[in-house]
Length: 102
Image (cartoon, rainbow, N blue to C red):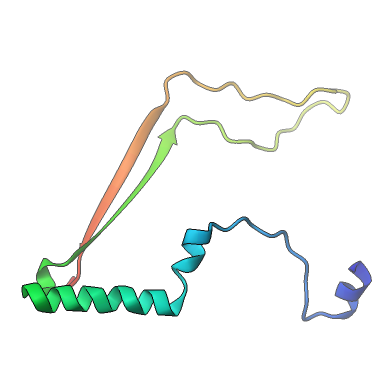
């Protein structure tokens, strides 16, 4: 396989990522179209104004969480270096709202 890739510049090898089935379905044009058809029907049925439509998104992360990192160490060290995890971690949640006319 390595020789094939070397001789064919238009192809390359990469590691595959796991992909959630539900997330993959969200890229299906038929499902996307059905969703927006339902949204349009609800807007029409209930007389919703465009300025009354919002999108909310939420994400979160941990402050003080150690991540793996490349470290420089002695070449005769046989064990893997360790990072000390602090005890006082704090969760932060961010919520963003955007108006459809903004």
